[in-house]
Image (cartoon, rainbow, N blue to C red; front, side):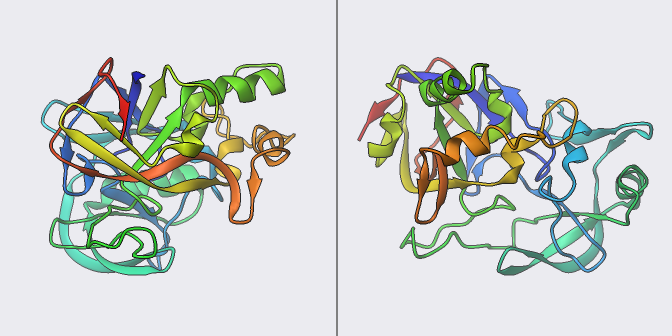
Length: 262
């Protein structure tokens, strides 16, 4: 097995950036989902309710600066401001820092609703769910875990059932692994690549975001591929595709690196 592709998501629920190398820190992938869009009350906003966010392009330059290209509004660089505020993501209520207002104002015009942009500073510690990870580990604004690993063969098997390829971007993985049989990941508890160990602690339950067309920013009228997944990947805790994980060791991860099971 090997790493087929890698993705980083600087802003939660905006498109990811496909990269050849993924640096790591104690959050997980470096720079991944340190920014988040919220409503005026600080509640997180995603493509679940605003699928058009898929049309906002994201760029990451060589020094880590993040910019967004908002349709009909222009390109804006995200800069951390000085005003702190509390925000909510799922059941977590955590401290963040507001961005300078320009990008949020552009997003508000695009979405036709007021929104804010916030950054997770290093001093904020949001813990990974202790039900699944016993040691004290942190996570950014990702839904619950630093990494999502998916199996390329499983996506291809799903595409075969649908009669058309499935765009991997719908599943928002950090790491795509090739060279395994479809659904082999159900039996994976951990992977090793280079000096990095990934403990795969929880199957990933999928939601309506998988039905968002990554180019057009609209939901599939037939609710695919989620509807097809539900016919054979439905478990007690949800419709499963991919596995969530935490890492040990230093990166970087690189496309083409070999992957073995622990």
